[in-house]
Every structure is written in structure tokens, then in C-alpha cells.
Image (tube, rainbow, N blue to C red; front, side, top):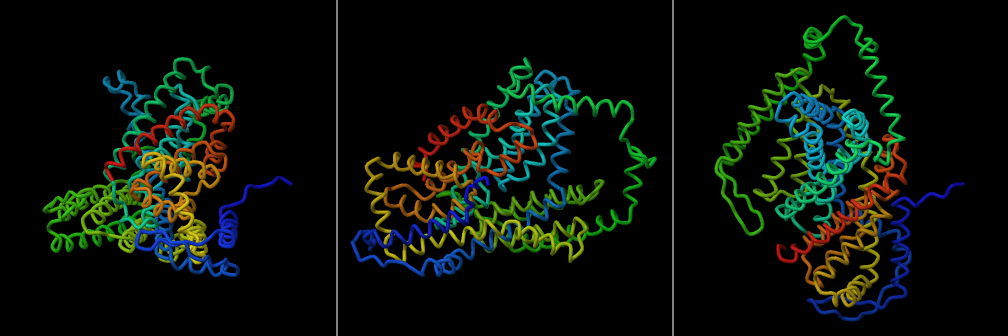
Amino acid sequence: MKKRFPVPPVIIFALILIAALLTWVLPGGQYIEGEFYPVESKPQTWQVFSAFFEGFSRQSGIIVFILVIGAAFWVINATQAVDHGIRSFLEFSLKMERKTFFKKVGVGNLLIVLVMLVFSLFGAVFGMSEETIAFTLLLIPLAVSMGYDSITGVCMVYVAAHTGFSAAFLNPFTVGIAQNLSGLPPFSGMGYRFICWISLTVISILFVLWYANRVRRDPRRSVMWEQDAYWRDRREMLRDKRNTGIGTADNGLTGEHAAGEQTKSPELRRVKIQCLIVYGLVLASLTVFSVFYRSTQIVVGREVWTIPGLIPGLAILFAFFGWRSINRHNASQPFILVLLAFTILFLVVGVLGYGWYLSEISGLFLALGILSGVAAGYRANDLAGKLMDGARDILGAAIIVGLAAGIIVVLEEGLVIDRILYAMAGKMGTMGRPGSLEAMYGIQTVINLLIPSASAKAALTMPIMAPFGDLVGVSRQATVLAFQFGDGFTNMITPTSGVLMAVLGVARIPYNKWFRWIWPFILLMVLLGAVLLLPTLIVW
């Protein structure tokens, strides 16, 4: 029987047992008003089981937050609104091929840049990961048809999204969870994270452009030349079908006439009415908010800006873009994209202007999920089912957060956690602040090779790394960024990542070929991450 690598819950329970064992072998210690004092440890036995309850109690807020976020995005994904937006974007990009300017620049180059920007932004804002599997199948045929290879197609989607994921500035699954576990305001320190996102995204785009144009000049230089025969043959087969008329619709409706008939469908009319209802409710709510919140104070670090009319201005923009989206064919998907965009805008305003925390952010995303479902035409029972499916899908990550908190509970109750921190500070403190920060980054990178789950790793490491950073003079924001970089880059190479293996599977790329191609890029990103961490010692 083939041996399987232990899943995160098994790893975490093993670590809880190890933590209990440490309470028997390590001398105790406590920090009191910043001074360390030796004390007697309290060996833990049956407490390894009661620690689960205490861990879940401590992390109840973040657990509910994860469940709500998972439920909301499940509904959005079920409506295929994001799919619709990306397909529309690709169609628009290909139309640019007829423009003289874009011919000179290179439509292929432009497409790679724009697509990678979009997916990197998605990774940075809401942690797009699993969704890249479906889009890989969409982009690889396009990349091959333009003279590139399957690796270029994977880079345009998967690598771009995970670069954004690594340098996220709004991702609730990495930044949000890690900052909460570190006792930081949600999404604080966004300014420097945004600079990191731009820097790493630009580097990744330049790297992919270099490779893609190298392949386009000589396709046989691609490491996937032989395997990509599948995609080239498929492209020729589809082209033959289009030329012979095979596979075209047989309902007698084409072009505008078909669209016109579809718009008359009772189901589409019902969906449009529901979009109008949601539009009216949101606009009415924003109008009321505009009366009470005529000006907003945005706080970024030590800077404070008073912006009059921010909420009323956003209400006007929503009125305009929301109405335009509803009046398009298949109104629900464009309108849901508008809802998603304005949710992100209000998330930023709420966090920076009104001090929103987990409860407000959870409420905002729950409202997004419900309103998106209504706009998509879901009936009440169906919508409730979708929300439950989303919560169920991400339940594993939420449970892991609670389980991992049990490790800290055992170490704290055994009075050895401070002893461990004291020993770490003694060992790494001699490295100075830069050395300690880079050491934390290295630890997170190594752990990610074994545990790719961001939420699991945050729950495991941040309760220890954050106070350790305090001891060696490294800010908690810098510690969170070290976690982000360590969590993100190696996801693109570790075979323990389910998403990576799924993407390579649908792309028909053998892991050994992918490893041979991607390792220089990963090394580059890891080194850039180390460099980008250093300014945090000054910025934060």
C-alpha cells in the first residue's frame, strides 16, 4: 500500500502530543513585565484533549470569519460571475489585435501582461487559488494557439495568482488571519504590502514574457514541446470543426436574434427583476449612509486624510455602474461583478476609515454572498444550500485553526511557552534584527514545503512568531509579511500542494518538467522576498 503524507489535522495532533511531552522535559518560565523568571513547569496529560475546546474558544472569531468568507465566495463562484468577467476580458484583449498600435507592441505580450495583472490582483485581494484550475484549461489552448506553450498558459493564471497571493494586501485567508492571530488591526500596513505586490508582480510578468517570447521564436526550445502535441492537435481539430460547421447550435438561432430570444425567456426576466431589487436595496442603503457619513477620515499608518463626500461618491458610482450592468444581456453576472468590486472598495474604506474588524468584515461578505445569490436568481432554499456548501467546503481550514490553537494552549498551561521564546531569542538574538527576521522567513518557507495550507500554518506559527518578534525587536507587521512570503512562493513548487498538482494534471505537465522549469523563478522570488523584508525594519 502506498504511504500517504499525513494530513494537517494529523500533523497538528502529533504536535500537540509533542507539546505535552515538552511540558515534562523542559523547565518552566514566565515573562513578567518584560523580565524572564524561571518557574516550575506543569506537565500536561489529559489536557491534550481539553486543549481543543480552549483552542476553539480562543479562535472562535476567526473561525466564524473563515466560514463566512468561504460561504460568500462559494456563492459568487457558483454564479460563474468571475468566469464571465475573465472571458469578457479575454475577448476584449483579442479584439485589440486589429489595432495598429497593439500589433506593434505585440498582442501576445499585451495579453500576457493584462491577464497576469488580473489574476495577480485576484490572488492579492481574495486569495484566488483553487479557481485557477478551471482557468488553466481556458488559457492553455489560447497560449498554444498564439505560439506559446502550456507552461506559459499555466504562468498566466496559476503563477500570477500565487504571486499575488504571496504578496497579498487584502487577502482575508492570509493577511486577515495572520494579523488577527498576531493581535494586529485587520489589513493594516497595506501601503508597503501594496508596494511589494507591484514589485513582485512586475518581476513575474517580465520573467514570463522573457520565456514566452523565447518559445515563440523557437517552439522546440520549450521543455513541453513534445507533450504539447496534445494541445496543438486539439487546436487543429477544433479549427476543422469550425470550418465544417460541426458543433454549431442547431436551434436555428444565431447572433443577435438568439440573444434577443434569450432575453425574452421568463427565467431571464425573473433574474433581471431580482437584480433590480438588489440594486434598489443597495442604492437605498448607500443613500442613507451618505446622509450620515458625509466625510471620512482615512488612517494609513500615522497619516490621516479627511475625504469629504467619499461615501456619497461611492454611492453615485454604484448607481451608475450597477444600472449599466443590469441593462446588459445576462444581467446577473455583470451585476455580481459590480457588487464584488464595490464590496472590496467598501472593505478598504471600512477598515481604513471606520476601524472595521472581524464582525463588520464578516457582515459585509455575508451580505455580498446573499445579494449575489438573489441577483443570480437563486430561490431561498437554493441560496441557503449554496452558503452551507461554501461553509462546509472551508470547514476543514476553520477546524485546523481551532486545533492548532490547542498547541499553544498546552504550552501555555504547561508554563513552557515563555521558556521556548526565551531560548529562541537567545539563539537568534545574536543575529540582530535583520538576521532574526530573515530566519523567521526561512522557517516559514521550510514549513510551507510540508504544510501548504495558509490558515493551518498561520495558526501554527503566528502565536509563537509574533511574540518572538517582540523579543528581538521585529515588528509584528514584519513578522506577518515574513509569513506571507514564506507561505506563498514555495506553493508553486512543493508536491504537497493539491492545487499545484491539480493544475499540472489538467495542463498535462509532468511534475519533473515543471520543477526543472520553475525552480530558478522560485529561487528569484525567495531572494526578492528576503530583500523586500529588510525595509520593514524601518517602515514598521
